[in-house]
Length: 158
Image 1 (cartoon, rainbow, N blue to C red):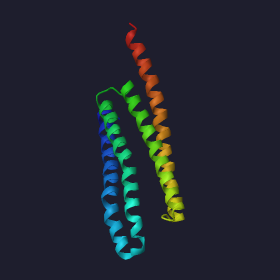
Image 2 (cartoon, helix red, strand yellow; image 1 turned 120 degrees about the vertical axis):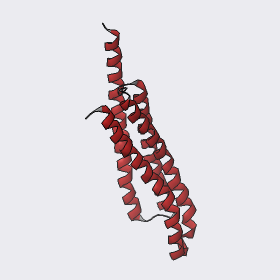
Image 3 (cartoon, helix red, strand yellow; image 1 turned 60 degrees about the vertical axis):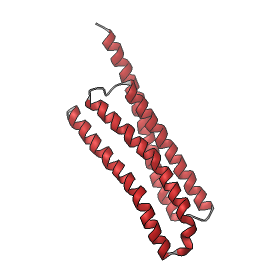
Image 4 (tube, rainbow, N blue to C red; image 1 turned 60 degrees about the horizontal axis):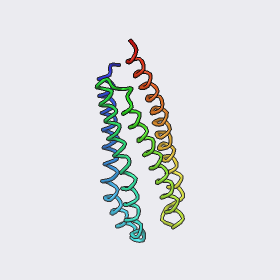
């Protein structure tokens, strides 16, 4: 696969991920209000959960932006660069931080009686995916940094 094709596919995938995160941010308030109208006893949980979900979406948008920059540098034939290594390191930190935030928030809501045990179990799947993204990004960051160093050394030799 050529770099331009790969870059375009990556951009499409990251744009779809960004649209999915945006959909979550926009549809959670809508469906939350519908649930409150059906179950008014849960009205005290609407704003804490809404703020929690929106807080979790912010790092996701940053990750999508950084991923689009990585795809752009792949398109420009700068795949193995220190900038990409730094971007992937940031993606790793953001994914790990968001996973920790999501875990702590779900646990806190559970202990406050604002979360159902099945939702806590379901959230573990999301947390595992976030940790997998963090680990994969950290490994890629390390490998790209090594490749960038090797490329820099080979550029200096005649």
